[in-house]
Length: 284
Image 1: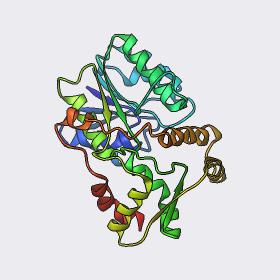
Image 2 (image 1 turned 90 degrees about the vertical axis):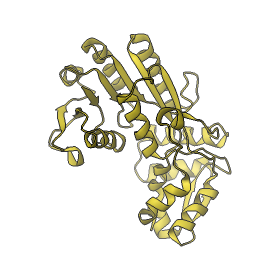
Image 3 (image 1 turned 60 degrees about the vertical axis):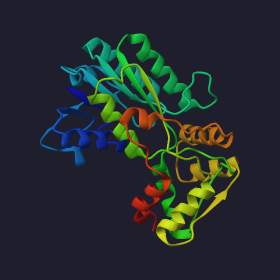
Image 4 (image 1 turned 90 degrees about the horizontal axis):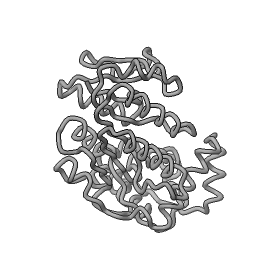
């Protein structure tokens, strides 16, 4: 049995639906059984599990041999994922596929990269088989800017002209499905990137071409980005963490083009041009 955590989030729900479409038995872990939404499918077993209540994890993991681990972004994510790793080991889970992050490292100045590295280390120390998926900046993350794109024809970030090899989340889902259902992914760490590294200005041009209207990227100082995030009610820890992410991008540390998608799935990753075309209506 495959368990998918975070099953009502974007990554988790997509994986649940893809497994169900292939008639692969899947158990979807949710915190509230009444809010299953798009994963309420005949072939999906829904089970309640709360990362903050480890005893519920043990129940969700009964009979599970493979698990996909992802949590919502929160300042408790590291503790939540470590609790899941402990429960999975107790329950006899054989293989964990973890959604990590590109450049995860215990010594990183980026808090999110440190926490992912800590969870990866715990999984490796547990003796369970693992596959780590380390995606770069999500292309779909640009949808967070759709409001200003719609109203101002512009989006803003503190990144300068640094290039980032952004990844389409659909490729992350494909890699996860492969790791969960096929042999040969045991002990692998896949760096997942798109096929090209782009500046945000270049991404804006692709979005302009796809939508048929002028979309501009405007670089802003980190202090301005932080103030903006706080003004729209981002928690302080999350706003500061995003600034650390963008400093990482600005230093040119996320421009590498990796072969992880091809290695995991046998297919080339989707281009930003494809993403822009497919999502153009959402930016209009």
